[in-house]
Amino acid sequence: MKNRTLILATVFSLLVFTTCEDYLDAPEKSSLNSEMIFSMLDVAEGAVNGIIHPLAETNAYRGRYLPYYGTNTDCEWFNSPSLTSSAKVDLAEYNVKPNNTEMNTANNAWNFMYVAIERANIAIQGLRGTGAALPGTDLGQLLGTALTYRAIVYSDLVKAWGDVPARFEQVSAENMYIPKSDRDVIYKQIIADLGEAGDLVAWPNENKYTQTVHGINKTFVKAFRARLCLNASGFSQRPDGIRRSVDPDLQPEVLLPVAKQELTEILNAQGKAGKMESSFETVFRKLCEEDYSAGGEALWQIPFGQARGRIAFHFAPTHDGNNKYYQMSAKRGGDYGPTPNLYYDYATGDLRRDVTIVPYAWKNGKQTPVIDDKGTFQVASKWNFGKYRFEWMKRVVTSSNDDGLQKQYMRFSEVYLMLAEINHLLNEGEVKNYILDVRTRAFGGNRTVAESTMNSDLWTALMDEYKFEFAGEMFRKEQLIRWNKLGENMRDTRERMRELTNIAGNEIKPAGRYADVPVNVFYKAANDDDGTLSFYGLNRGEEAADAPAGYTQILWLDKDRFSPQKDEDGNILSFDKIEALFLNDPDTRQYWPIWEYFINNSNGMLKNDYEY
Image (cartoon, rainbow, N blue to C red):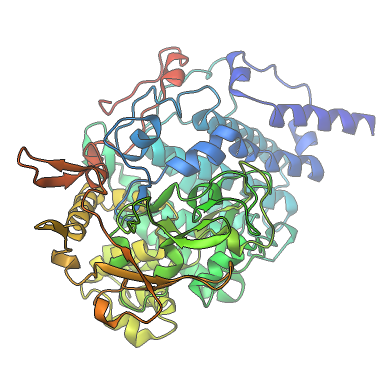
């Protein structure tokens, strides 16, 4: 018992208290036998669980990576856009520098992601050393979990920074300082690792580790591997320009059949692989109600505890003032929202719109339209996302900084859309029906309406479907990058917003694709604080003359609301808040630079390659 306690203490200190500073001196070789340590199930479980512990640190995923990566896109933007540079707006508006004060610290996401990778490397080596980590065993499940955790972190590193150091073995004196590797090296390794992990882990609910959405299960591993195959074989910015990989192992004709096989196996195992929820709203109500049961829509969630995590903090509808749903003692929510055109881009009858986008906020326990101090309805400035809602939670959040809602990393509906994408790229197999498998749910199960409102061009329909399905979940940027559509779609979105706020004489009159959007909006207050506001005039074609009795009119758009840029004669040229969607060409700023702190402490090994 004494020896076991010593082993547990040693492993705990190694896996839980390792920090960036610990790597400045090479670790001494442990006198404990790795096989002995990791053959003890409870020790191995602790080691594997400790891999993702660093991601919950204040400046890791919790307070930096998840709030900032993924915006701005063609459907998501920072809700306080500005042409004036600041650390937060620079991150959103493709204007970030290596010394960004939100990110350029020793204890930031980059550091903690490599702490997680080091812990994963230790666990993987230890579990493999036992010789007992085999399919169908607990140790095998843990090895598959460790491999998947490492793949998750490396995938997120590549998404944010492009080429990064590839470290797949423990830190030593010989490999302490290493340069960046081509991302192709990382993609090949983690795609192979997930192939191995898929054989090791169980389906949802098949063993004690896969009973909840926190456990790594076979459905998630296979779906995540397919996503990585799409990203690795797609386009991305390189030091020499935007292109696909030239590595023969990462060509579409090589990786897409691998991805298709993984996704097909998921659908063929429907009885145990999981399924889409029948209702789109139910997906997010279950998330907010903290229903963690496996086998449904959610394939894996980052397991923040109730005292950690800032998902609602950033992405929920704004609450200003404590109420029966909310006790955070400060205004929270609403940091990010939909680009204003998105509301009108959903087809009539698409139930996802009113789940994804809400035109109200909470003020002192009452729902109120999102208006400014002039009474202007902020339809084109600061609406909220609605997938995460304090009012849907079963508990009242009392922490001032953390809400405990979890990041849903992958959902079952993506399985269908990836299959449609792969079949389109390979020019083989079904495309339309896989899109409709997702879209039909959005129209209450009416497949005929779903099809009749879908774009006739299937590639455009597919790209749109990803947007309408996942807006506000911060996955859009990686999709646009792999399609080489980031800059193009961002420019189109800015033009859409210009059409929505078109100036006609001295008034705003929507034009072009938004010519039938009303400018008269009416609302009716809820009878009590858990009711919802009723609106008229938000849907295309709703005329003021037909507004219901008892509704109050509110201003829709005020031409001075968006910090207008004017010529010398006072004519409005554009609106600052719309122009601030991006300050540099997004195609030249697909990645964050490596932060100055880490470059300065890399012994000359790290540099930035993208001219910023």
